Structures are given as structure tokens and as C-alpha cells.
Length: 238
Image (cartoon, rainbow, N blue to C red; front, side, top):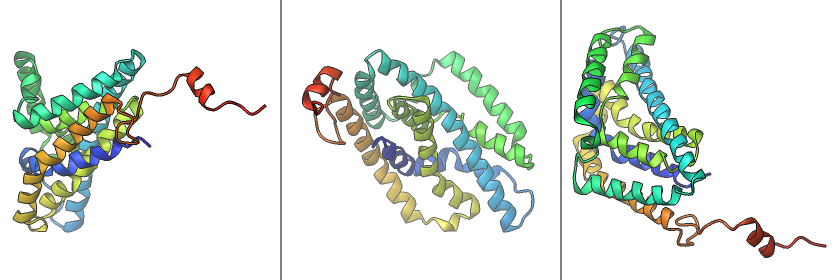
């Protein structure tokens, strides 16, 4: 298993406080089909499942792109660049959001928000799932950061898995908020908010180290041996 997959959960948990401010109001605005606890639980699961499904699709796209970079021999450079971009997002908050071309982004975002608003009050299961999927498409620097991480996973499948794990990392915070704000205290939110840049920075450093191929097992493995070198190191028994 790729050790980088663990960083997806770290990013998700670290960014939970950020998710609370971005996605929390949407989660609270969506009504439950019925006022009972069970209906609220099911609607919460559907909303978050839709969001994670969108993240997985984004991860598949970025993972496929990263696979192309690997075939071109550029994946190590991409890993270093990804780590540096994440570090930039910590030093300059909001930098990732500003990457989008302003004119086209504003049009797309406006249409997305309009579609989300029209669907917000619908409580059918498929409508709740769609609301969650649309929520996952809203501009978010944390999602961009995770997508960058998924691009160095080497395949569409691993990229999708990376983003799905990232989404699962954000699940507890948004689940607790929708089910009842008292499930998560102010102290826990404050701790996550303070820890977020540290954890994101750790993921960024790991990506840079992976790209540098320093020969450190698991952390920064060296360049794989070629076929000739491998056969020389492990001669077949005669």
C-alpha cells in the first residue's frame, strides 16, 4: 500500500475546522425528510456520501493526470512541486483559490451555486445525494490541496482512493455539526484549527521528500533499480 494514502486522512482531519466554515452552513441548511433522529442521520449520510463521491471523481481525474506524468518520467518533480504548493498555501492563505482564472471561474461558480440553491430544500434521497455532490464542487483551498496530493498517487484508482480517504477525514466534524452542534465542543474545534497548518505542512514536507528520492525507506525511497541493476543485485540461482 502506498504510504502517502495515510496523508489523505491527515489532510481531512486537519482541515475539518476549515470544512466547518465552508460546508457547515450548507449541511445545516438542508432539511431532513422528517424531524426524527433517524431521518436526520440518513440525510446526513447521504449528503456526506455525495460529497465524498465528488471528491473521488476529482481524485480519479488528478490521479490519471499524475499517471501520465509518471509515464513521462516527471512524477518525482510533480511530487516536489505539489509539496511546495501546499507549503505556499500555508504561508499565503487563499493562494490556491486565486489560481483559478477569475472570469471563467466566477461564471462556473455562479452556476454551481444557483443549481445548489435550487436543490437545497429537496429532501428525496437522490436530491440529498446530489446536494452533497454539488457541495463537493464548491471552491475550497483544502480540496485543491488534497487534489494536488492525489496527483502524485500514480493512477486514477489510487487518486480516487486518496480523495475518498480525505473526505472521510472531514466526515466526523460535519457529521457532528449536522447531528447536533453539542457533539463537538469549542475546544476540539479550536485545537483542530490550530493544528491544521502544522499537519498540512507535514504532508507538504513528506511530498517534497518523496520527490527527492533520498533513499530513506518509506519516507523517501530511492529511485527504483533498472532491470539490469536488479538482476545484478539478485542473480538467479543456477
